[in-house]
Length: 463
Image (cartoon, rainbow, N blue to C red):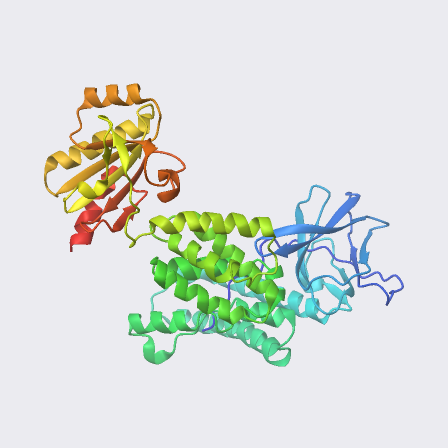
């Protein structure tokens, strides 16, 4: 069975069927009739992905609201909002942009009168069918729970519910097949989930592969009209959190596949690129910052985006260039910093199986806790761990006094005295504490981790 999520959030529908003389020179002219409403001001807003923006304002005049403008509206899902900017109604704006909608006082979609918009006629008919399905299901659900699986009544009720659901499915299919280029058809398809073939029902791994490979098959990423609906962000989140392994190279591969599907529509390419740039600039999962660097190199630096200014380009590339120096899997940048005796020291002096670089400040309470936790781990002697502790302040006396008090047996250096590049740039340090974990060859295997995570990370790496 094809599953389609509930189409829109709040469906409180106000409509009007009172025509003024249509002006063919106007890009759009939309009438609403609001019975027994006291607000004087109303807003027309449109979605741009999961956000919406006001595009027009009108006043109530004898129960009628009219929005009109010289330029056509972007096709998508629109909102009628009251003077408090509360959502009253969602409707569609497609190719037909001169229409009126009227509903009774009960806001009953079954009694909607729509003139001039076939798209909204189908949309409201669809709402009626959804409401009918939910009403029947909610009525019979408690009854079914009390019936045995093989009871005659259960079989009859289940068959009736299946018939109602099938009617809704057939209605959707009919719209998609007869009006393939209509916005509403694109929306219905975009919300459709892959239908698992019967021969895969017993093979969960095969089901997953089929579902993933067909996840985008009905979502037309080349159609910019879908940007003016709230569907795409949720679709992207589902795909990348549930179907893509959070490994940088895998994520990059999947991003390129999606960007290829959008190729040819610059607005969609721009949106997707900016979405991924924002998502992976400060990723929640270690190692995915490599994705941001790739996006900067492949899409920003190569001028594949239309909506970017020179200053934005400069900032993104500056950020990417700073991040690329300390990516997971890369050799850690060299540091030669001064120790408490005035001698320049490198962490490459350490011949341990693992090396911890900890950037810290003796006045930072969180740093002190991390240092204690790290010391406890090293003293367990379960793993061969060397520590190179980089203090970030220029308070040499305070730093030395604290180390004398604690007596941590590590290489201690001060980041403000260096014969190599600034550690802030080399390791992307903008706050402390920050911990990096290196293997024996001084390759970065962990970054921005807590001291309490080091043991688990080493054990997983050593498997």
